[in-house]
Length: 114
Image 1 (cartoon, rainbow, N blue to C red):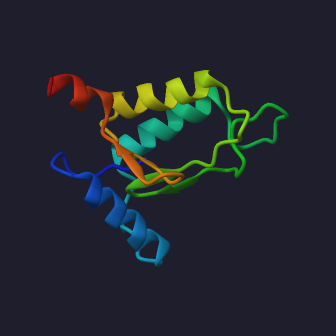
Image 2 (image 1 turned 90 degrees about the vertical axis):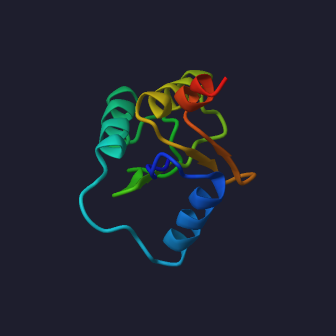
C-alpha cells in the first residue's frame, strides 16, 4: 500500500517499490494516510500476536513513511481483502500487487474518474 502524490501513476508506485528494495527509503514521519490505514487495519486484524487464523504470513507488518507491506496467507479470508481495499480508498492509497506487478488506484479515484 503506497501513499504517493495525487498524480502518481502505476510506474511511480513500481519505481518507489524498487527504490525500497534497493534500500532507499523515504525519510520523515509516517504519512498520515499510511498511519490511519495501518491503525484501522490492525485494529481488525492484529499483526502483533500470532493467531491461528491470522491473514499475515509475516508480522508485524512493515510500515515505512510512504508505504505498508503486507504478506497475506494463502487462506486469507475475502473479508480481509475487502477491508484492505476499503481502507485504501478511504485513505487515498495505491495498492501494488507484488505477485503480478499490478497497481490499483484507490477505489475513490476510480469512481471519481467514471
